[in-house]
Image (cartoon, rainbow, N blue to C red; front, side, top):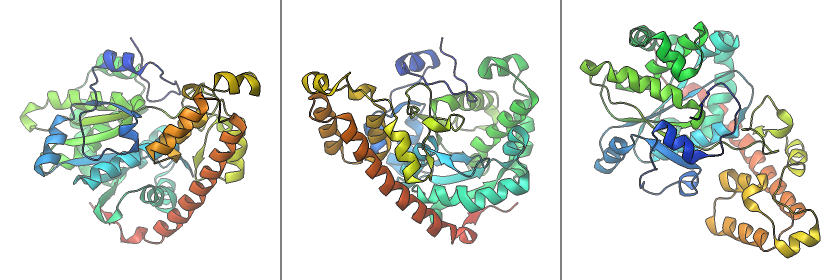
Amino acid sequence: MAMIDPYGSRLYKDYEKVMKDFGLEQLPDLPEENRLMRRGVVFASRDLKPVVKAMEERKPFYVLTGIMPTSERIHLGNKMVVENVAYFQKHGAQTYILVADLEAATARGVSLEEAKKRAMDFHIPSYIALGLDPKKTTFYFQSENSNVINFAYEAAKKITLNEFKAVYGSADPGRIMAAVTQVGDILFPQFEERMPGVIPVGIDQDPHIRLTRDVVNRMKDRKFFSPAAIYNKFTPSLDGELKMSKSRPHTCIELPDDPKKVCKKIMRALTGGRESVEVQRKKGGIPEDCMIFELYKQHLIEDDKELQKIHDDCKAGKLLCGEDKQHCCELMERYMKKLKKDIEAARKNVDKLNFIRF
């Protein structure tokens, strides 16, 4: 059986096995699927039908994700989650963004004051720049939400130590506190009104979903909806070895980043090229093994026909790796410049955002 670890850097390649081992479902038909959904980057879901029904019947439902304010940059995995949150927001979801400042303090040693500063100066403006509608988004800080903290203690009584170890692999106090607090966060939108909710995550975060669903099942008298989830594949590191991680900066693209530095990384990236130009022109490349093509598919090219042409030209030997990498550099430079501009614009309006005050 596969082991899903929310704290590791493993790159899962057999997603069908992951789906089978953890009881995940195919993504159901959704209206106006976004780039990630229609290309299979969002590859699975868990219990999404109540959310789809609420979308179709225009009934209340919510989407929620968190910000971990431990760094001055985010990564492409964050980008995918925000794009999926924005998708459900566009289709009527009540949208919640929590700042996990308690978890940052407990697990990463970042003070609450520093966490708040980083969130307001960078993380929240970045999430808005990536597609959130700030006028339709509710924000809160974990440390200020006494309702979540109080509920975390209730949730903790419903979980045994052995069950926690079975889900997470280990059970040190910091992880336990962070996990039960996340249960409170995931269910927080239902404290006043019971309604379906969806949590977009990378597959490594599934333990948090499973733990929350277990707690809901043991609190049937509270009549919570079990949280649904959708799961995106990882953006692989540029060498194709692990999921993209800030712990390996030479193979990771952070947001925002200096375009020249990013281009140097792209030029060293693993491709699906052959051993020589002559062989590649004759046999064609292998875009399925190419990290440049993954960047196109997941992040840089919106038009499906354009992406298909790149795929076909590579397979036919018409597109060589050097030319392909240069094109990727140009697209990435354009993207980074726009993102930086959008973050700066969003930063000017953070004092006008809808923060819950407790």
